[in-house]
Length: 114
Image 1 (tube, one colour):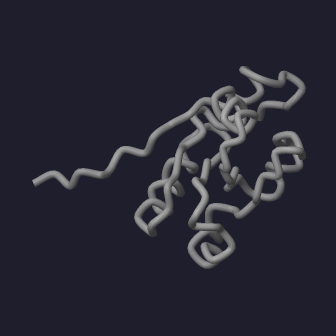
Image 2 (tube, rainbow, N blue to C red; image 1 turned 90 degrees about the horizontal axis):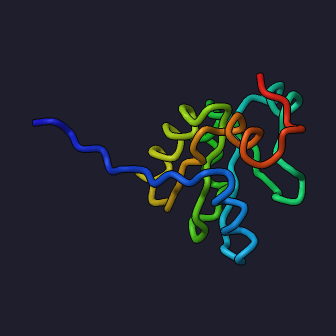
């Protein structure tokens, strides 16, 4: 039998910002490496948490399980894996589709792509 993995819902960067503006309580978790944040980051007012993908398992206690977590990476691949891991550990998660590349394309062209 094929193991069915629960689908992780995806939202675009535009949808994420719209939800925040509506007052949704949503943690933005950036799982990229520190050097990547130096190249391209989301606006500071979004108060993104930064936990590199490789540290999520040991730092999961830093995340508030009562809040939905939107996971962000460069292109949406790593964030999908992390979102799935968090979901398996009792979190409600969404993947930010297309990652920081889509963020730059959709919302803020001043964010460099790499």
